[in-house]
Image 1 (cartoon, rainbow, N blue to C red):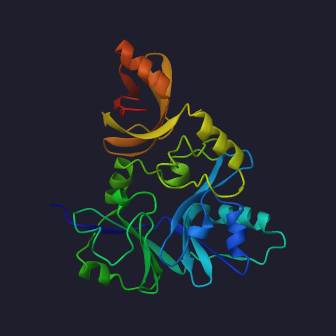
Image 2: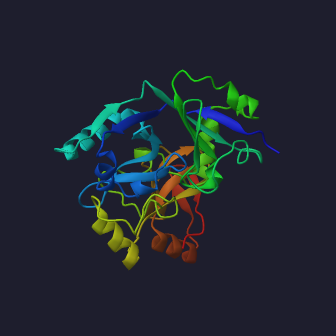
Length: 296
């Protein structure tokens, strides 16, 4: 039985969204339902272009009278700038709170799920050490996630049975479960939520009211027009750089995204993959052979 690990995710950033109109402000922008966010539940969501293409993904959690967005650290400024552009006259305060908080992933072993008293189900959250500890809103298989004050003592995690791991441990874990890492895996201004698996990752609510980019997302869902899918692949051979095309003979059938060792996430074209399998053509990317999953 493997030991549960905790890994500080130093590449994450935090945007705070406060003010009397913070909830309605976010509700009109993000792909998930802000009304589900309480001290007992967090969500995963995205910000899209008006045309429905991916811009940012983030976790949304309650913090006092406002919200925190756990997002890509190198792109905090871009996310903040886009939110400011939509603020207009809304009574909302936006700030980069990255220096105030840190993000920690907890996963692995059979004891990780029950180590803390958290509400059941994806996103179940509770206050710990002045911050928030939650079940990963994308999937309980991904473990737990914490957003804690920067100076918080992490020894309580070790007291709960977790051992400090390395960034590579978390990288392998998320790739194995098909969880994208923001713009490393989802092409900004081009990717759609449905091709990135947002429905399976609980990142989009099809029952909420209008939000930016909703039309394409809903149309793609109801018409089933998903021609590309982000999925984990196995590799036999050296890891290809991100952006390397996946080939079946002379025909491109996908593209490598983030990866580590013998696994990667890739954007795949299911129809072309199926045709290659029927023809007995191996898939390659650079010098590696690519083993795709079974695609619907």
